Image (tube, rainbow, N blue to C red; front, side):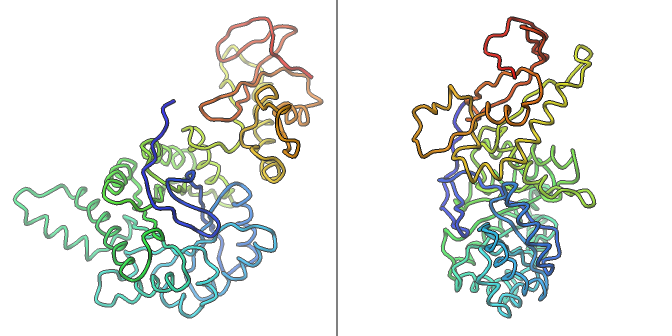
Amino acid sequence: MAEIQRRKTPTVKIGAVRVGWEVPVIVQSMTNTDTADVAGTIEQVATLALAGSEIVRVTVNNEAAAAAVPHIVEGLDKRGLRVPIVGDFHYNGHLLLKKFPATARALSKYRINPGNASIGKKDNDNFQVMVECAVENQKPVRIGVNWGSLDQALLTRMMDENSRRPDPLPAREVMMEAMLVSALDSAKAAERYGLRHDQIILSAKLSGVRDLVDVYMALAARCDYALHLGLTEAGMGAKGLIASTAGLAPLLLAGIGDTIRVSLTPKPNGDRREEVQAAQQILQSLGIRSFMPQVTSCPGCGRTTSTYFQELAEQIQSYLRTQMPEWRKKYTGVEELSWPSWAASSTAPASRSTLTLESVCRGHLRSRRHRFISTANSRLRCAEIRLWLSSSRYWIDTSRATTGRARSVKSW
């Protein structure tokens, strides 16, 4: 597999997490709790962090939410969770950050939307004050442009200028150019107000897949700021998953993107961790990062009427996912679990704990009689569990409908 050449960017420090081309692409998520509900927000942030979210954003939309932020960060610290918390500000961010200085200090990053922060207007207090607060507290800022809240004054001016051209551009191109101008001009303004170049992350989110790809390709070509990727309003279920994957994959394969979020609409009372798992799976499927062993199993057809392999695949996948948060604390490199012969455990340092697929499956499925083969997938740098249907000394690979004498088969 050809190595992906990452686009070079400054390295931005967000709490203890670094974002930029020198480090792996970071997975982040956002809560949907009322931030003023301290206990509920702590619980959801903890759940997201344990699922693998390396940065978590919370909305700071009113005084109650702003007042709650320091208590949320303190509560997470008591649990031993140091996940950076990002404050999402809109129309009143300048007022909240000034009125609640403890919140300005507790947050690891501020997210500012230029479309509702008065950037470029005569009354520029909102944007400038928030940036100056970031400078005072040495916090990075994500300038996040969103097509649904694009600066209307800027867009109107650019549309008027385009209409006077002898060969007017399509409205789509003008709108995307307006998003680029909004992001880049806001970044320049932030630097004028005192932010360093390596304290700025940009994003330009749309809900159309091809629009997203085009705008980020252009943005990446016109600056070297670190970029946050995400398809806004991706949707629910399969639609959200597929659209997000279709939008993020070509950008990531082109080396564009330093942090990602999959903005899924959850079902009522749904599991917020799904967006974290989706972002991880996109990165792992592209060979960019490893998060956990992959379970590969046959989809089934008329030749495989038994549900045994389906149940086995589900059980192993569920077991691995639930155990990973604890294993990460105990075992170095657990994300790249391997079979003993590849783990080279005999030559590993004595102080290093070794966890293998053999111990995983032996521990979880000890009472079940089955056979399986695990093969190393070098492209993903992690182990891939392949499930097999067994019969005496013969195995059946249900994905190929071939049979042969078992050799490297383990059974318990």
